[in-house]
Length: 205
Image 1: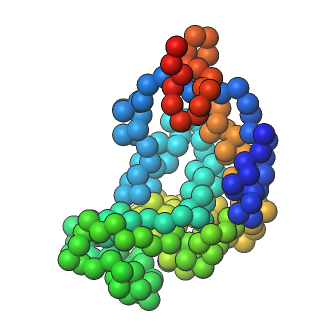
Image 2: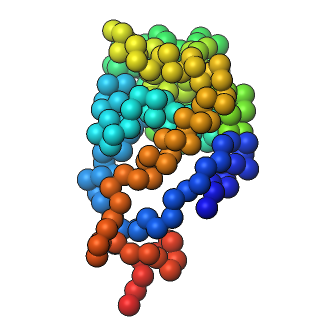
């Protein structure tokens, strides 16, 4: 089985392993521990490392942001009050900052207005996302932090960002590898979970 949505958007293809079971209940604690757009780089790297995903996997999987949009409320603080400083994030390109402020006003910190995660090619799966970061145009803190986190925190991730920006083939190969590794995290075995008849709901009876 392939990953057609990514492939049809111009991205890589890989063989998706079959047989993984779905859970029977939601995992609230697990959901709360998902990577967040406001997490600092150290915390993000730790969350991925906890599942045996290394820095290359982490930076590659972040590349999924080459497609999609984010609500203003998720990056509002970067535009106006980053880390409680009453100033914008100093790592952000000034022209990009001005552009984002037009659709994300200071008066509405909970705005759900959408901005493209990868403005140059928002609907194509490519390595443009990493070029944005090199130009200080990463939309989310979790994006730009891979290059610009303070205090040398990005020493391990910045070279990978540069490598993927320079080589789409390298990004694609690393992304496919990371997706396979992620699909193998904590599979349900024995009597745990189920193979669903309808992927949207648990089986009944």
